[in-house]
Amino acid sequence: MKSIRILLAEDDSNLGNLLKNYLTAKNLETSLFTNGIKALDAFPSGQFDICILDIMMPEMDGLTLAREIRNLNPSVPLIFLTAKSQKEDVLEGFRTGADDYLTKPFSMEELLYRIQAIMKRISQSPPGRKDNLYIIGKYSFNPLKQLLVIGDHELKLTTKESELLELLCRHGNEILERNFALKSIWIDDNYFNARSMDVYITRLRKYLKKDPSVRILNVHGKGYKLIS
Image (tube, rainbow, N blue to C red; front, side):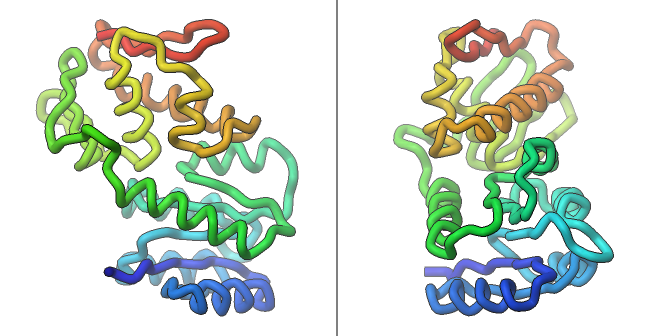
């Protein structure tokens, strides 16, 4: 089995080394970088499977680093570490494409659980999923390749964008219940994850706007409905 490679960007050397040693002991190949610039320089050649980014770092903060990583690889999972509890910081992290977040202080066991949950979700295809296309109006969507195509335009989706769009497709012209989507993709239906899903719904609407016949409707008190 291929070893999971982790990029860890954390400017607190004590915490960074503790996390690196713990994850390495759990057979996760972890590379530690003490600022965003060093992490970004290493990312293209590192073949990393997941990135763990502290938000507050010198030279390049975690949010900026996440945007740069997303330009290089739109689908690599991102987990943010933050010492701040303000909702705005967490939501900004989700807007940059975060898959999850942890607020300091946190337990290393919880971080390991979050990593394992994300990697399991990526590696295992949901039951009944095949290497085929969903047709959404003038769009075609390949969930395995995470590609949304209209005409000669291809868009590579992030993992969560792809998972959410596939759930909508599976419930095409029917209601996708909000809590079901949250628990299926985000594991937990807490406030921050709910707001994160709102951000992803907004993104999907933007991606699908080239065909006016395709809409993602809000169904008040229930969830969403994909119309095509």
